View: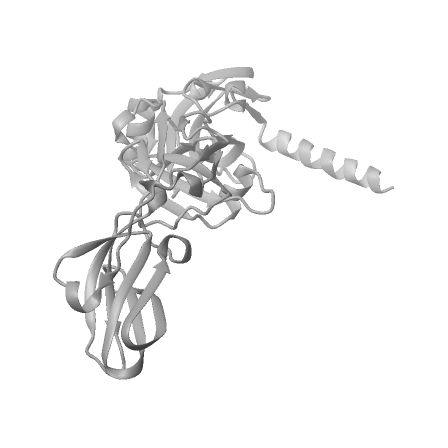
Length: 365
């Protein structure tokens, strides 16, 4: 009984609509693949009634920030199937000039979902001589893959350089007017690269890049040994999203310790050698401190970035005479190769000292 009721209701609604609004709209099959100018050249309207003049309004609304384009035509519909030629896209009305420039001059469309609706207004008398609208819509998605092609590092590469150069190429007529967003995320728990880039918090993200390459910056979070990262690039034209690249992955495997260049590192005599110079430190911070005025004390060593952010504090009990401190910086601390750091040294009973050093990771020399 339930199926009979459903069929009855459906048939009643269809009969009622056809009696009052006797039109069907057929969109171009070219829109089934992706949004393009050829797919917007015509629509077909089946008129189940007599000849009449209608107002036809076409509107495409994009998912991005209220972007839309529209046109209006006054045409005569004949009985049966009518093929309606739509004005060229340069004659449409656009919500802003950037959208028009993208579509008219660069033959591109915003990426993402869109809705293309045809609205028909007619003066056919239905009840009280009012305008009666008929509207049918096509829902599609425009996602032009391979608009951006990743080049380097290759997919599933194994890298030893902690600051790799990431390079890509965009195949688009807008060329140098494009900007990019580069995103890098860590793969966790056997994730695929695409899932990691969509779900995980980025370890690095840079927006509004005007070039198609970037050296992983020293201020970004360090790539961690034996971890795998996904990376992807998105393209924009004047803040209109155009599409994205595939998602590739690379694994960071730093050079083995046996490749380290042996470097002799002398102790820095705090009381004799401190000056305004910047000292070079290769992997280890080695300090000599001579305690004179007490039998024992505590040596406090604090390391700061160039922006006065303290990143490490070391305490060591010392005795009268020469004391030696050694700290392995490339294994214990997140110091960056080639950057300058500040050291403040003090004890409870003697005056303090400070100096600057430039850090060199011996594995990268």
